[in-house]
Length: 615
Image 1 (cartoon, rainbow, N blue to C red):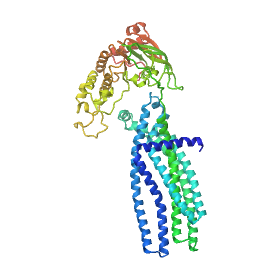
Image 2 (cartoon, rainbow, N blue to C red):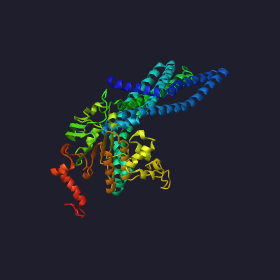
Image 3 (cartoon, one colour):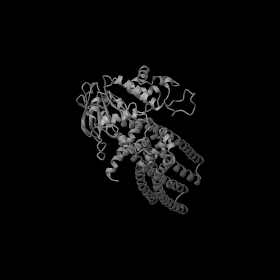
Image 4 (tube, rainbow, N blue to C red):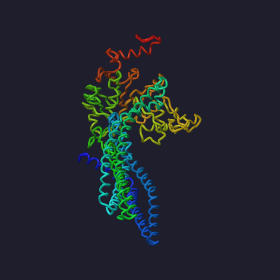
């Protein structure tokens, strides 16, 4: 290992110890005291045993023997009690450090401005390992103190062996060097294997989620996908198992070789000691001391080796945690952000180009748009034309690859992202259904409304879902999930309720209506999944909400956008047509063709099959 390799490991070790001391200072102090105490016990017991045997063999006084036996008994009692104290302290340190580390990890994740990292497979693998390493600081403390304990015990027994024979002492110590080198190498290999099988295990979790997800269950059952998905899940599991199995076999071979070496050294030393005792060169107590010292040295060496190897592996895993926590913002944040003023003039997209990476195709190609304050702009176009990408850029989940987005002439890159988003309300096409109460599900649109039932009910009423939520078993306090309950039956008022897709759509709208006073309202397919009457009702409500406000409306239902002040047709990431509804119809372009096709589809009553459709 080079010096450059050791530096980050040393920094990680210091960081982990500091985190543990900060999280559990009293438990750490007690754990250190117990560690020092337990390090001395084996050596003390070995010496007491030697002195007792020598005193008995030489017919020493009863009082001397009694004192030594009492000391042995006391040491044994304390030594028996110490593991329980150690277990409690270790658990307390793990609990407190795990809490602090988890808070630190998710605080770091919350610092991310955009969402690109959560769409990066490499980052997701590292994040999974970082979450698994949340308790690493506590384990590292365990290994460090185990290393200290082993060194102290080793020093005590080495000193005892030196009293008996220097050569045997050096041989016993030398036997531990290969164990140390191989264990460190194996720990590096194990950490590398865990990282390499990350994508495989993530795919396994993905298939597992599909097999247990309510959302996927309908298609899985209907299309008979269970065997197929299970096969892929098990294939990935077996691939990961094979990698772990190869590593385990290698470790077992190494440990078997090291154990054989250790046994050979112990046997040779014991034979020499017994022979020397027969010749009168050593006492019975010396023989017992040698046996205890050889076992103690090997045990201490094993402890040191295990602590170094285990600590090394944990440090490498802790590196993933540290990398996530120390990762800077995914999007640049201005050191001195400009004010986020109330929108008075409008929002401009100036020559905006965007792609998700250098290896991806362009999603937007030189888009120029202006959304005047107080008006509604509708984005229409085929799937993949860039509509939802513009929403992501407006919310600054991503930055344009080229070009700029201006808020009253100010580049939104120069604004505080949180302040910018505080001025935006939105309903996303893939809105969230939270496993919370009905009241909380609405209040999440503006956390200042938590506990304010009046605001919550007003927003729900505006979205047309108030009567639905009020009629639930516990009204707005009803959980909108069955995740936290058993199958207690529909008559149990404590049982959660699952809403229909259309009802959830209105709850998501209610969240947006809590933010109706914001400067910009983004409505991305707000009526998706609704029946015709519900769709008409929603758009009627939206027209009232949008009146006089700055709104961006996205919909594939062109009849829902015809009253927008400006309609923009996107195609291949560029603006193809723009104008009011009547202007675009008169132009006879793509918008007019799409609108007439939809209108014709609604008007036709015949059940005519499209050309080429299989009979």
